[in-house]
Length: 493
Image (cartoon, rainbow, N blue to C red; front, side, top):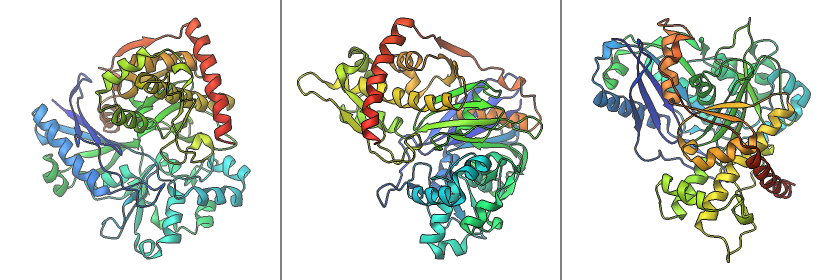
């Protein structure tokens, strides 16, 4: 029997999955640590993590897999990696980390990206990068260059979080075209690294890692890494992708017109298309999708809401640390619209859908005489959905037509109320599947290793539920959303 292993490196935890390559069944899953990984914010608006912590939790998660399902290290045929997007890891010539990773929700480089957007020209940026340089990896590197010059001088290679884990596994620094696009280093028109952006930021191209294919042998596990993981040396790493392109792959969202969504640490809607598309304000972003080729372009438009899981976690704390299913049940007791209470879930750094404004979370129309914990919990779930709908409206204005979305049955999608509000506010059919990012990375690893075809990769994946919008509920939630939207206009003036 042959297996593949998929790792999903998030900012909250590392997930791992063990897949049977013959049946497509997931045999074991593991999460490490059991509590959320720490995130440092030495200055308001910053967010950093130690990359070596991710590597340690990879080791812990692998051991948990082995405890759940006994397998020999040499039975693993390939490894796939998914990872939190837009982070910056800097290493020296000895592959040692030079500073904590500046991760996805860190806001320090917003002004640097805005300046570049204007200096390079908004039309040029959107035509060639399909995005503003914004608060992405390239702008974060520019921040290090400007404010930590001694660190910058020591940098041998910069990489994304998944590139770092791949380097720890294989000893080789590499990245992908999809990864370069998420860092806003990629020229879509020329299908190459953007020399114009590098020149503007005064970044030497030698700092970028070598490009490897998204699917294919990217390196092999070293004896040192194998010893730490309990695996065999020489296992190929055959796939890597950012968490949202990978989430889309996990749900078999690969062709134009298909869309995926997730509501975990962040809330995301990700839609695939085959043409050049961008938002004039770069409030949603276009990246190279995992199955893009020169012959058949595949791009993914991503809208991201930072304040999703963190709002739900905060509500849990202030509600007495209830279990999430208890919170969902309580929220469902409150009426639709939470009797006028609105929550705007923008309390986790600058929000791209608000043109990189950091408004903080806002609660409006609280009435101490009528609102209770149930109303607060419901308004939280509705507020997350409404913010996602706001982003989807931007995507619609770009010409994307989203009527059906796929999601893993996890996180906020475990809440029947959340599913109801989402389907009827966005007027979409929701399909829920028994998969997650780690399983997706494991399936993709098999493609990269040539063990099976793309079509065969999704054996063993099942649709667990389908939620259809209801005409009466659509009207009801449409009116509630309009009230929420009116309030948003006052917040972002």
